[in-house]
Length: 382
Image (cartoon, rainbow, N blue to C red; front, side):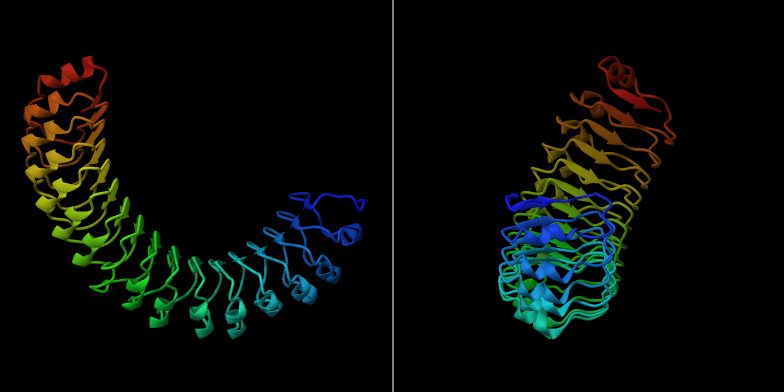
């Protein structure tokens, strides 16, 4: 039993509860109730009497519905009900005037109601990993949204009205069935994270990235892209770019404008060459290019003064530029399974290299400097 002097927060996380004890109903001053990770299949109607609740955590239960009295929780700001069995959106949620966070990830929702547009204070909406194929027009009128997770659904298209969400900072559209994007996401100038992975995209709008100057993370992996728009060079704040598992045959010259880029992941494409401008990426630390069709590297690659990790395995490289020896901070170099018959002596001068992988190369002879690297503590695989 719980007394009336219980604190404002009650945590009953992971207690294997199948029901909620009636004594909780007396805790009318409760502001935060956490029922995460239990076995609750339903909640009592008296939950609506806890009118001072601001945060309610119901994640990881077996709920198929929420109590009708939920609409009495007029002070509720956060509702978390991820990983349940909700097949219909509980419309009483739309009567919660102060709701700022709504998480319904990993349920069985097939639609959202037009009444969701009443949640004018909503900042964070997650309805990923449901069965949604379309969205109500009212959703695109939630002008205060900052976080929108629509991942792992069945969307094949998006409306131009997505451009209304001008305060969005995080947009996750990954793991859907999108075959194209509208121009409108280019209006989302406050985006810092954009996930487009695991769709069916073959092209991107030319203007998509023209105004996304705050974007720090871009993931467009696992699509069918053959080219990137030149506007990608406008992503002045980008730190991590993930492009792998596409059909890219080249990277745009504008890539060299990404002055703050730290990681570039472009493995498993069809890249035959790299732009000379890649040498402008002075802050780049990781460059992943395995499983492409590269036959040569630009001399400018030696200008990547902060590069620590360079993966070139399984390409068609016939020779390496001498400038590789300028990569003073390089610690990992993978050259496996290329067409190299010899290596530039400058590699032996790399001062910080810790691992050099030369397996599956048919070198005419092993360079004498390999032993010198090993004596310095470098692991060399041949």
